Length: 133
Image 1 (cartoon, rainbow, N blue to C red):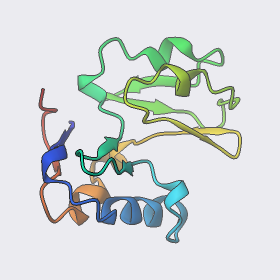
Image 2 (image 1 turned 30 degrees about the vertical axis):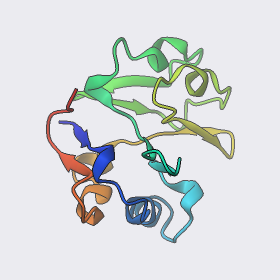
Image 3 (image 1 turned 90 degrees about the vertical axis):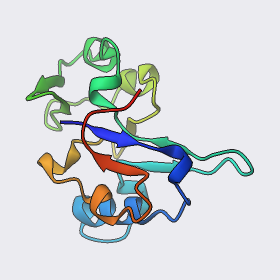
């Protein structure tokens, strides 16, 4: 399980962020999205999302003093009940894919295997599959 990210195909439409926020919060609240498109015009945008398999050593897991981050079926997941909102995981994430919101860490969990962002990405910038290098 993984997410293929092709930054060169991203048009910065933010459909992925909208879909994620709808799944996560029930409304369009881009701040609740677990993926973020960071424009860098005229350069390519930065797509901030957990890269699971492509993240060497999963530093967020070891950084969590509450042991609220762990691996399950190839995904790195955050236990919201155990999270103390300290921000240690956010500080070490090499993809800037973890955010603290309302004193809890948030990151992508691939929507449990059916990522809404992939469904909404019409350009193919986000695809299911093995993470590309």
